[in-house]
Image (cartoon, rainbow, N blue to C red; front, side, top):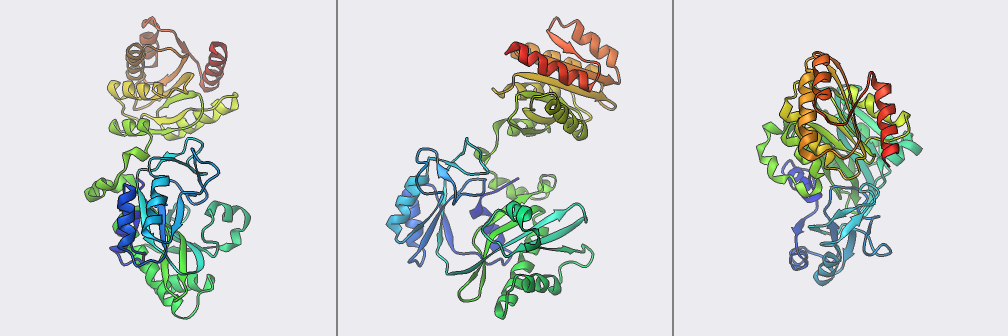
Length: 398
């Protein structure tokens, strides 16, 4: 689960992470009032959406104008900046062409920036440890830095048994070229950030940029937190931070049925059991010249109702021109999948080609259910056969 910048900063502040003063605003009037509460003379008005690159982004109705992060030199200017953002669609590198509607802004105090750095904490599966990443290239996309200047990324893996120690932070501080009291400030910052990461069961905490002020303080100028969904049951207080308007409606619906669904930009809808098989299915669709419209893993113990819901979610995507169902029945029974597919196809009035490949437990029964349904279901003998048939059927239908 992702949250907004202002929410992330409020959480981090509670653990002692240094952040600037600021207030969220839903209207231009609230933005002006928020600025009036800050010392000035410079204010920053930031669009709040779940995407990076806001400052370099552009609004769909004003592509030649300013981005989603703007400076203001008075409360009145803060109001004008908020008015230009609220209710408008901001397009960034991470949102894609569709962009995201700005429903709230964050009005923050200005800052005397001496240097911009990068800092993040994440779970590194390669080392099975929480890893701290830092770079002198703050304000840039870390993916770009990794691609073109990997030597500028510093990494420190923390032993979970020993925990974070002072030498971890000092090693990074020296690597970043910090000196004097900046080192102590950075060490305090990293320690507080690590405590927040552990306590909140985070998947990632990213500060980009982390700034060194003219006075030598270290402050989070931006903040991103993503929580581990599997641990949210331990944090019911975080549920109120969820902004469903920032999430794909299909993914929200899938979560209600405990389905693993991710929307993509292709035209072939996929319903598969098992993440590995789902990835292989998407790959082979690409191999045969098309692209998957989604990742959807119904799991190993799906019911008829769950399968029906999955089918409806796939068909709710207007870009879907064909569907490939690929099931290997181990724990999952092929007849249950077949019943769900038939029920869903009848309920939604199937209007796109449907190819089904079943293998495993009760496979013959599953095939009989589909054959007797009277629906135009195309069966396949193996995965390659299924991918070839669905791509061809979509091409012929188009």
